[in-house]
Image (cartoon, rainbow, N blue to C red; front, side, top):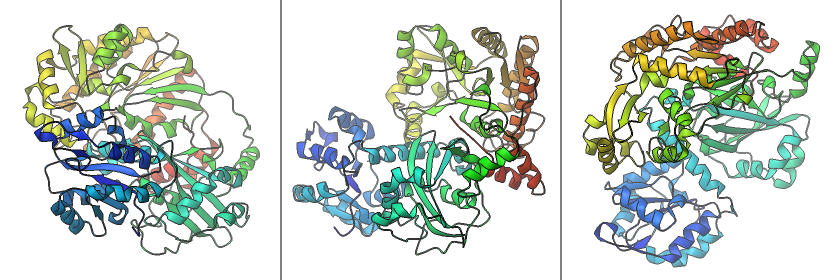
Amino acid sequence: MPDPIKLLIWDLDDTFWRGTLSEGPVAAVPAHLALVRATAGRGLVHTIVSKNDLAPVEAQLEALGIRDFFVFLRVGWQPKGPVIQELLAAMQLRAPNALFLDDNPANRREAAFYNPGLHTADPAEIAALTPQLLALGKPDAGLSRLRQYQLLERQQQARAQYEGDNLAFLRAAGLQVEFREGPAALLPDVARIEELINRSNQLNFTKKRVEAATLAASFADSRRCWGSVRVRDQFGDYGLVGVFCVDLDANTLEQFVFSCRILHLGIEQFTYAWLGFPALEVQGEVITELTKTDRPDWLTIVGHDPNAAATAGNPGAAGAATAAAAANGTPATAAPRLRVFLKGGCDLGQLTPYLRAFDLAVEEEFNFLNENQITAHLEHTALLRHTRELPPPEQQRLAQLPFLGPGAFDTKLWDTTHYDALVFSPLMDYTQDLYRERRTGLEIPFGGYHNLLAADPTALAARYARRKFRGMDEAFLRRFAADFRYEGPISPTGFAENLGWLRRQIPAAVPIFFLNGSEIEVPGSAETGAAARHAALNAALETFVAGAENCFLIDVRPFVNQPADVTNNLRHYQPRHYRTLAQHLAQAIAAWRGQQLTRSRWADWQAQAWQWLPEKVRYAVARVFNPRSWR
């Protein structure tokens, strides 16, 4: 095998196991189970392409204790050649780095035709191939490579829920980039950096290989600025995924390399902009094209060092940032900042960098993708009441609903020792519908603008399967229809009652800043009646805040008031409006506190330096260069 195998693609019937699952019981092949576990422990990744039904396949894999070793399952009845072609693209791998195991010669020929360079083998050959496969890769006892592909799978499943609106997905993903520079920061990662430079090709713009023996020494070269790039988002931590080296005298890039695990996230273009677009002579073929103008606005810089973010756009200038702070009279150690707890949908993560430009410490609690690959929203006031009022056994019972999951009743909201002010977005009350359990009368929020009990369960299950939801099969939907009845959206009266309950749960001294919703009619939206819902609950929220102690309303309607102000629905705003919203929020917090919030001098200088730019460009630049720190 001239190309190193990184991926094993397994057929199931009479290949991975003995027998045909759709015809009856199958028998495990112990050697195959052992091979999967052993090679996963050396960094090889395993997937399945099988003509079968998904539910029994997953049940059988679970019974064998092997399900979690497989990612990107492709189980269905489509021809395998095109399926493998799509699979490799999704996993960001090349056909020569994959081995397809199938007992049917016709399937192997088809797969090879659609995927030139793909290795194929009959299961009878597995025993002979095993020593070669066990010699590939390197020890990975923590299964870190498998974890990275599980992360990629979660990310892509979430991306699919945005139905083609990739920009909206990227802005909601909470992407954070950390740059580390200098020998002290890089030496612990020298092995990973050497591996990335010497083994990466598709996103290796310079293709200048290095010797491990001299790499570490070069980090200390004062004529060069070496740095690493780390990325994380709401789906997990991608780890060290990029390396750069700038020749400071010539302002040219000698190394500019990234892992394919961050493909389509804009990391390489963001880094190039952060470095100030130094000269770069691209070597060979790469799968993305860099520009000297684009500055992706959906990423946030986080600092390994508290001063790291302040050096954005100036490689190797951490010391300069410290000196500048001293020159401006900024104290080296800041006083404890007002602590703000931000709870709502994950799009509110776009507020955080702007709030942190003020002297605010921000902690977030947003929706997340649960273990069933379904976005779990935990901020509906009906669900919040269950976190306080239901006994743990009842919470655990309801958590078995696939759209909730074990984390549905976990919240830091009630621990008020870690925040001084609460910022709460109740937009899930505006959006989700309620379903009442017939036996207990408990209300559970899910979905929105669609009564799933009125839909054909077969068709709805197929739709959920296409979105990769787990547990939302036809059998569950029929049980759910038998156990629950549709109530529709929360009423303004019920909403106001829950707001009063929420106010009573939070100490009276802690202010609550409520964010309301826009009332825009979005052309072509599938959310029929959304603007009217928003108007009704906005009125209820305004009335409640007017009569409640230590509650404040942050009104988005003055600046989010036409279709061009939102993206894919009336809850997701254009990026510039999150900056405006953060400023309104900071002003309200300052008024409550009775003390003006201090904005960083760097941010003030930045606003003056870039004020001649169009607002959209100025916003994008601010996103790149603003000092930021995240939890």
